[in-house]
Amino acid sequence: MKISTKGRYALLVLADIAENGREKNVSIREMAERQGISDKYLEGIVSRLSAAGLVKSGRGKYGGYRLVCETKDYNVYEILYAAEDSIALVSCLEDDAEECPMMNDCLTAPLWKHLQDEFRKVMEQISLEDVIEQRFPVEA
Image 1 (cartoon, helix red, strand yellow):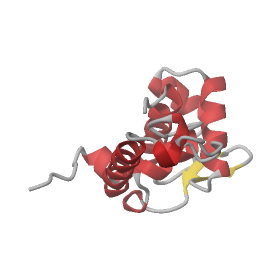
Image 2 (cartoon, rainbow, N blue to C red):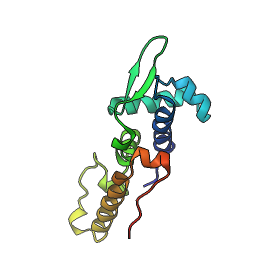
Image 3 (cartoon, rainbow, N blue to C red):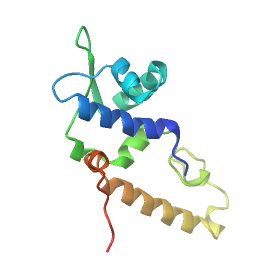
């Protein structure tokens, strides 16, 4: 799995909203200026985050975006899943993939499935709050 620019920026956008939107909505223009990303590109990312229910929008003079819950309640997996076209390690494990005719006989399919499941578990353990605070779970 390669995390695309969309996925990386989705995490950045939510962190920006969390840091700058405590008392107000955060506009795309403000985020774009702070992050050095084009307004147009951010609109696409925020649209995906909104469709996934991760942000809510406000219109008018003080319009912009807010988080729908606390930063501790978001996890990296759900954010990337909302932003990316696919987060599968290999194409045969994509959500909308046709079942591979070789799946039952494929020697490596169980490995890819296991690695993907483990990666997902790790991403689900890391909250947006952890990202902002730079805290990451460490295995003993």
